Amino acid sequence: MINLSKATHSLTHRGPDAFGTHIDESIGLGHRRLSIIDLSEDANQPMKDESERYIIIFNGEIYNYKELRKELESKGVGFRTQSDTEVLLQCFIQYGSEMLQKLNGFFAFAIFDCQKEELFVARDRFGIKPLYYLYDEDKFLFASELQSIISFGIEKKMDLESLYTYFQLNYIPAPDTIFQNIKMLMPGNYMWVRKQEMEIHPFYQIDYNEVSVENNNLTYEQQKEKLSELIDTSVRRRLVADVPVGTFLSGGIDSSVITGIAKKYKNDLHTFSIGYSDEPYFDETKYANLVAKKFGTEHTVFSLSKKEIEDELFHVLENIDQPFADSSAIPVYILSKRTREHITVALSGDGADELFSGYNKHSAFHRAAQSSITNSLLKNFSFLTSILPKSRSTALTNKFRQLDRFSKSLQSDIKSRYWQWASLGSEKLSYSLFSESLRKKLQRNEFYARKEFLLKDLKTENLNEVLLTDMNLVLPNDMLKKVDLMSMAHGLEVRVPFLDHEVVNFVFSLPAESKINGKMRKRILQDAYKELLPAELYNRPKQGFEVPLLRWFRGSLSGLIRDDLLKDNFIAEQGLFDTGTIKNIKKKLFSISPGDVHAHIWALIVFQYWWKKHFN
Image (cartoon, rainbow, N blue to C red; front, side, top):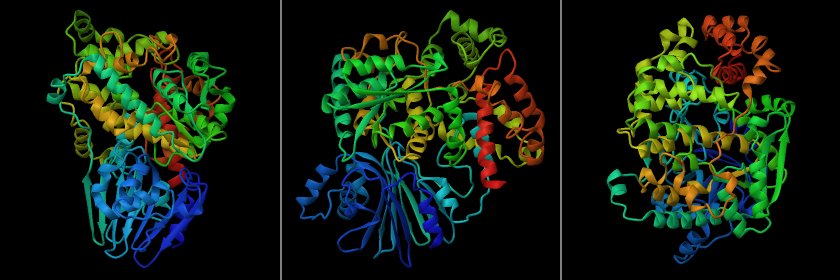
């Protein structure tokens, strides 16, 4: 079982506190532990029950484990530790797969029944924790990161449809991965593996039905009150730990709400934010300082120079297990690294944008659904917006970029519009990137079938359907993946109170107008906490967690493009990409209207670094 040891050690960064394996003639299990609840050695994993029939390995936290423990004790179940892992194991022994309905938390875990020789594997409702697997005629492998499965020496054959999708979305949606033979278990699903048989079943999907929404008879004031109660309870649950806990504080509404509530229950709350000392346009730390001052937290700001960020660039690339090009992973990596020097668990505001309509695209969807003279003009004269200079480097050129995307999208149906706004690269661009040999191998019908599956919830212009699609597509495959990869690279656990399933189910029982109107995104969240937060946070532009890639690629990182990963000779020898398309992209980088070219280049850099690591 040399490969098992190697695979487990590849995850040391995720679990720096303990290492354990279980090996017998039927199964090998390996675990790296990040100790959060019950720090004793007795709580290490793999963990067996008293009879030694069942063995568990578990990544995550069960927030209601104390209540579940009391329930189990009332049935005569005894416990040897104070850990949530043992509670999880005993829940399975008592209730089987039905136990998943009882859990409040985030998790990826596996339980092996030594008597029946069957394996039970589950992933949490929203995909906060990852779970990759490979199943073929002679083996079943699973892990928290793709590189752990690769440690077993498996055949590595790229999935071209996944690569094609990657160059559009900047990530690869589950259940597919960059490799044909490796998949991801979908959020809210579990599987049974029994010798030559594997079954996958759903145990959760967001409770959304437009008829139920229309029948919701709560007044707006009652909705706000109920939402506040649920979020308050969620934050309180997520403060339970036997190690130091703090919050990420960006200065936006979401993290500020979490921080304000957490401070009520934790007097010595530590908060952490990151800023750019050389790039004032991208720096939001003044808002974070306002919030920290209001709540009296012990606040730490990591103000980074361009050089400090660039120095971490290759560390970020090294920790990406499959092509993933959300560039905000860079500051998340650095923030997590610095924060881990102070605490072990951080609460974040992730999930609120997808729940409450926090993105610019949500305002655009809301506007596009209205009949107006402006929409009509933009739809018929979109060629005019195409000649405006567009980039993300300044407020004005970014507005031009958004206006051009909006005007072009008005000519599309809801699914095409959503895909366009969810993508940073068009299908046409993705196809043009491929070399002639790859184009011949690409199965575009397979891509369209996958795309249709991802967009299955979009049936009307109702914004709730857009938010539901975001929750199932963008949230687990982009936002949560980014935070998990970059935080666990440093053994930092990030908890997300907005993704308590009781909060999510309630929010999806509300009409779209509670979340957005003509003037305000995240309406109900902002209104519910208006008395709690500083007034300066309201009606300010949403900046996002971006980095100034365009300036870097035109300056200090230009050599990485010109002389290394996108070098003409290397592209030609590699044989994957069209040399003419790559040259045009590099040329556009230095044009007066670069648009989103920096994002395309970053996607190429991420892939090229990953490819050289695995294939060169």
